[in-house]
Image 1: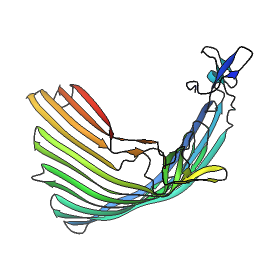
Image 2: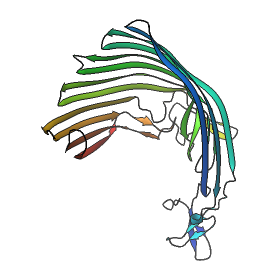
Image 3: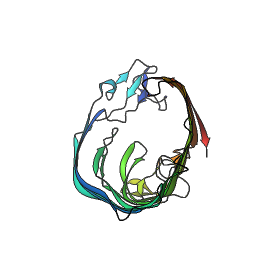
Image 4: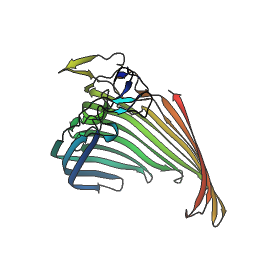
Length: 347
């Protein structure tokens, strides 16, 4: 990596100097991971009556993961060499390749669910479920410095209550649900100032609701939309201290490493609000030709990419898409054009 001359040139002689080229990858890295997973499951529904049914399922799995990583000198940027093809010449700061590292893990875990559903009407159903999710362990090595991460299995307890319905002679579909999720050992990616690493968070919760609807106004015209509110929050997460700390948080040093307790921070990359809205038109021209047109909009609120960081975030944005085409009714062929506009800086 050669930044735009941010470093003081290094004197190579009375009249020659070179600008440092910083290599943070320790050369050319090679990382291999082999995962084997074995699982068995059962899932079913028992109808107590025509309106009421019980749900249940269970899954057990075993995961075996083996990983290895090493690096060699990159011949394009060998350590302590000078690149005379640039002005001023570039000098590669010395670095050492990383020796072979290995890691492995094997663990058995389970997931399952219990619940019930009740039909208030032939096309209206309410339901509730309690479920346990499981994601197996892994061993990872970063591509830059070869840092090893031993990641424990992730588990989640999910409680969901919802409604599914089709109304007005099934021209309108409306679905809604509320969810309450509690995670242990959440597997997440965190920037440590140099690179992204996969780590476990001690505790994490996500509560919210989502709705989606579709209206077939006519055989040629339909509308659809959806909205999701998701309040995510770490309940316990000690991780690397960001370069610029958000107000209200304080870093501390442990075993020579600068850390921060990110309790109360949202999940990286997770918006609190998101919404979609769309319209579709299909107009038959003949038995073998039809015109179609679609417009859709998508909104996503602000997200944060590095926990407790005051700068690593992206404002909300709106995306508007337009699509029009002509083709065969059965989809054998179609010619179309599309346009997409992104508006940034939205709250």
